[in-house]
Image (cartoon, rainbow, N blue to C red):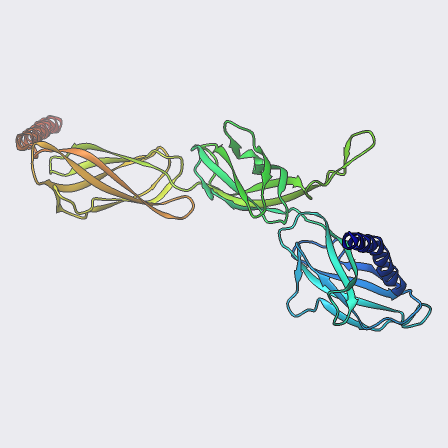
Length: 419
């Protein structure tokens, strides 16, 4: 019984003593009178990816000199140590209050994470006696202002050349190159004198959200007039979006203010013109055996230095002459004829015949088109040639006889006049 009684008394004493010990320790720390304050941050606010510089003031407001003090910064996200810099500073002893050496100023540098959003982030500062880090006398958090700015760019355009009269897909890739998500974006474009117009939609597209380092593609179906003169034309582009994530305030009336918008205006060149298209058809086989073809410019652009050729292929061979014919320039809707001396491997059947049409487009590029059509291979009609030769001979004889009769009649009239 006595032992239990003694134990109870000891436990009671410990319970009563602990608060007084904690109070004494607090008073002891307070007696030291050490204070730490953040003087400033540079830049203020700091942007993601920048180097942050913070200055702290360490003061002794106590009645006695301190021991050797150490100030340490403990960086956590979004802050990290700059290579080669120190996060621990030994400030030495501080004199008692009212003495000149009672305060010191320390400076630290840290790197801010590239992808941090706007806001205030805590940075912890420790103060303790040198060699006694386990007994920290001051631990404080100071909040650092970080301004995360949105930024975007039009990364690429899918179309460099637009053929008049041909509906074409026009795509723009918009990339978020800033440090915070891009919100409420609006993209629009317009061309010089409205030469290029969207088909099936307006020239404005809205984008709700693009994450950091993300991109999005906006598509338009566009068309230009078939009679548009080939050349390089300007395309003006405009992108507007919220500058800073959640940059807004609510007034007492409940309305939103300070919605900051950023506008990016840029331009690009788009070439209208380019290539054209051709059609080739078999016309006839001449009496000499040559095959005649009609070559037509069925596109919307002029073609210069047009050459049509028949490459070496199975089923056909060249009888004589060149395998290429120079046609010159062909305006749109123009056509001309090209003759080739061809010998088929087999007569009396339709054989595939391949062509190559080379030309210079309106933008100065040399283009080649491959064409193929079926041509009926037949022998030259010898009887028609003979008939034509006989008919031609009869006409010649008749002409000679007529001239002889006219000459004789003239001679008779001449003699009568003489008499």
